[in-house]
Length: 179
Image (cartoon, rainbow, N blue to C red; front, side, top):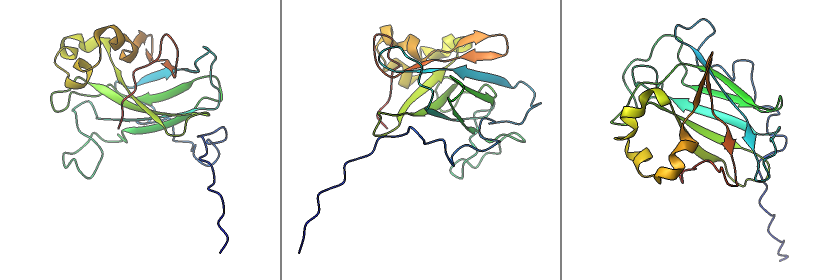
């Protein structure tokens, strides 16, 4: 019996967007949803270069803190998907969503996965909002992050929503969670 060598693990990308991006991909809520915002950002590598072949996914609660998931029996707001996916081929990502509500003692946040070349697995982070700084102090996940690194998890307000840049490595590396 002949033994074949093990195939090496493949990294995510660079062509992961093929077949994964749909027209409704970047919309966690439909256009025209009351209170809708854009969450935009870029993904940077360790050298500070923008990665233009990454993909970002978000998962979040609706403004009432309810999830569109079978494990959450509470109803979500009409049109709310709570999930969006966007590639970075244009130099960044943009997802159309609403601000999430607080859930289970956690400050309002958006869970984010990033897939990019050079990664064997996705990286997972959270996006918190400066509007809820009072709840940041009691959020158990944010409290577990060293104080000097918490800023990498806070989005910056802009006219039509927020900006959240992701740094995969380097001095400004975003905090990632082992899930």
